[in-house]
Length: 260
Image (cartoon, rainbow, N blue to C red; front, side):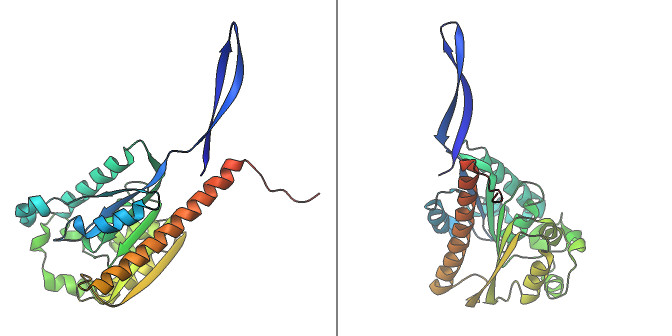
């Protein structure tokens, strides 16, 4: 575990001596999970528990218009949902044990789309997108339920330049580590969307791509659910291990120099 150090003055009668407190760091990485459209936080609770076991503070939430507020779903715009995601992020990093410099955001479908945009508005170190959706910027303020589905699918099957789409532009600016997961038999987010997302991540420190063989968009069978959980847990575990190794190296204060 990495250490934190604090220089203090210790009073001794009418004088002071200087000391250094060396203590284990209590800060932990944070992970925000964002569910898809018409879903709820239960889709990520089991995975959040698995990630928490790795030493990570996790937060799941129900977006407005979902779960207990499902009666309002017809009025929900992407602006509403982005506001929810920003508030959830701020709640997570507001916890005193969370390391603000080590935040993961994980999203599926609509949640993946929102997660990508979030990365331009808040610091995100690790970005995990499963079957991230794609929408035209022009109808941003339109209630999502009113978006023309046929036009949307035509758009999703086309080549989209990052500069013309808010989510793809966010991915093009992202410089952390990214995970992109595709379902082999996805009829909601077709393969062309994943091609657009992959092409956008040109500045990412690393990009991991995984295909879930035989899976549909909703991961309807248990095998697909388990496969995604395994991919996500392995990837984030590798990210966290790398982070801790870097912290441990910094904590030693040892510098490597050329042999004399």
